[in-house]
Image (cartoon, rainbow over all chains, first blue to last red; front, side, top):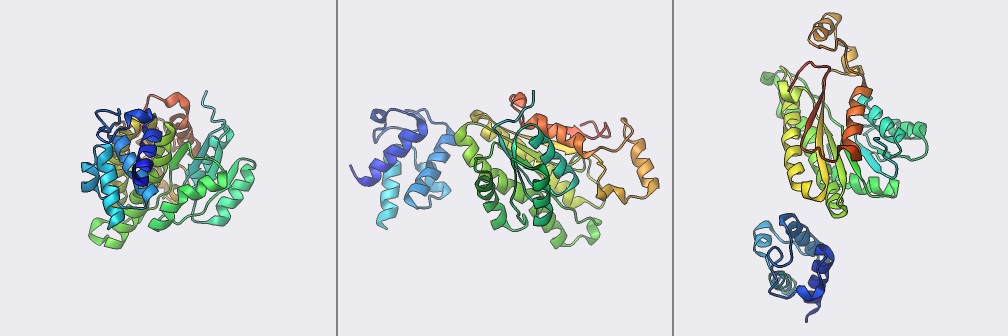
Length: 79
Length: 246
């Protein structure tokens, strides 16, 4: 697993207080990990801070799973 | 009841009559209090007067960057995260609409509405994480009734009520409450200068037959800042002697 994926997972575990084993790439923040809309906003802000990237509102709306977040940040970091 | 031991509060506009009364009552109830205002000498003096557990952080809230930075600055001087934010700072630029310049409008909307929003935004971040917090925004009866010569001020204060209700909905699931205190006519240097005839007319419209004291407003703020107000959010508490019953 990439360093980014590791870090994303850690942030999700910490923020949502879920077990690490549940944070699979396919896991949806809202449907599988019990997040509400405010949690998803806070997660995006935590990602922005941790990775020093800016995630605009329209991109943030599309980040619904752990994999979405990893893919988006990897793409930003590669650019 | 209404003790605030172990809590930390920021009060903006703390050099004014209402702001200093709010700071005093929160401090008296056991909270650490950070006083903010534009006049550093005044808030420093007030902090010294209050003594232990009182701090100050000067800020010119018409500068967006200073508003953005104030929460971090307050938490730094107090050495603790904020549990209570009281947005009390405000100013007026009164004139009839026909003569109101964009500058008058923008200045009032910026300091009385945009700056409180910025402070709410910065404070909420931590409060939501900590699953606790109290925001009390000081509006005005003018936001409910309007007032000739105060289109800018009335818009800002009415806007504050709508903003607070929205934030209350956003933050409620985390145990953070956002409420408004809307004072009526309070005895301050601002109302001292009113002509006697106008004062008399004012009094006849107040069922409780006197102008308010800054402490009357501060007590309402204390209630909304306390644990006891835990099931009250998005509310506007009118403190106006019954002049307007909204």
